[in-house]
Amino acid sequence: MKAIKIAALAAVLASTSALAETDKTGFYIGGAVNQVKLSVDNDFSESGVGLGAYGGYNFNEWFGLESNLFASGDLGEDGVDIGAGAWTFTPKFTVQFNDMFSGFAKVGLASMAVVVDTDFGDDDFTGVGLTWGLGLNAAINEHLNIRLSYDRSSGDLDGDFADNLDADISQIALGVHYQF
Image 1: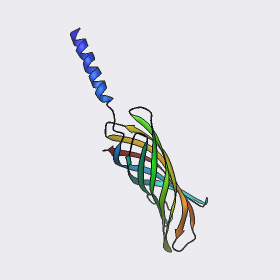
Image 2 (image 1 turned 60 degrees about the vertical axis):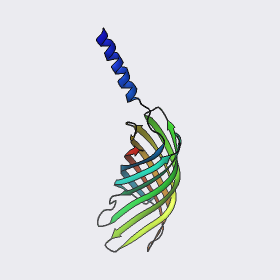
Image 3 (image 1 turned 45 degrees about the vertical axis):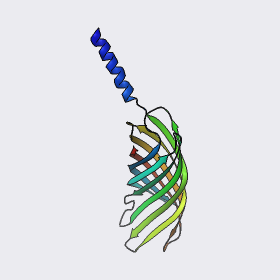
Image 4 (image 1 turned 180 degrees about the horizontal axis):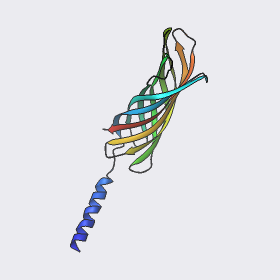
């Protein structure tokens, strides 16, 4: 009987420490693997794998500021190399579902770039646009978090030699970050 009480007490103590309060405020920094999609003027649409880095500061449980930098691998084919990326800055609004799971939404500004490299020449398209995103976050422990997010940036990009592009750059990202 005494062994059962000790085992029950150990189980309660272990479950209490496993459910310890996670840190939801302060700085965080992380990286992500992305599926990036570039759509231009509703005529061209390609997707590929990319990488990203993000970080921010949560002022409280529901409000923070975040910056996200992501870029694609080569999206072109048949002798045409195309790369796309964006650097975003957004306020982020978070809803805590419980101590482990939360959801977030963000909207802000994006600096966007599309680089086209062909046998006939290169052209860089850049511009500022609007961005928005949604995501889910899972706290693994007090400092380590995993998240799944969707971000979309849209804007008119100016080229060096070619006409302007009406571009949408979106990403689905699986990221991991450290909450300081």
